[in-house]
Image (cartoon, rainbow, N blue to C red; front, side, top):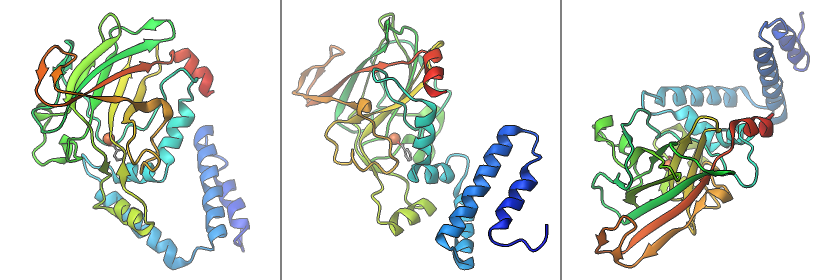
Length: 296
Ligand code: BEZ
Ligand code: FE
């Protein structure tokens, strides 16, 4: 085809993609081209603006390394990550909602089978005792694997500090539920914190006058054969940033009650000489078969 104009170019690109043997790849690429071309037409984008976009994406790629994934952060802050999670994990009302994994999950920690482990690694903060239960519609889920991870009182994850290695992890653990579906550990009260702002995503957040803050939370990932793996957060009820999470992760079923207690005996039986907090929370899993039906 010759003399392609600004309308027929879309038809011609779609035609050239039409022989893609993999039907799903064809569907995705053709939809991408349709939306990209329409975006260019709707905005009347200039050559200079297009080039600025290319430079921005190049810099985003150059900011990624083995630990940092700026493209995922861009997707998170544009709401794409949570949209993809939501449409792939539609939940019935009784089930805990799914949220983004975030960039600070670490696989391969040693598994702790006992209860009450102190995961704080000695970092400063207000003591927190987590006593939680994993439930299915017909009762407790025993022997589920529970990953828990959170930022420290300065709003940083251990992996953001120089010299991090897996054997020097803190504020994260892999736990196992007991026969009643319970797990527990000692930690510190999470604080709200900003997403990483020193890269291209930070530039976008500043240019658009957006708050970089995430409401205080702890991440949990729960797996058990026969259930849809649950990736979720437990946010602190009353946090000032619940309505404006920079990455759109807050869901009603993901807000927890972190109860403040006067100094005294904690849930693990130890005596604590300062005020402490207790998060007593129930996670509700979706059987894998029902999750498939909800999503298809
Ligand atoms: C987090 O919760 O740790 C997080 C999630 C998305 C982007 C940045 C941080
Ligand atoms: Fe987080």
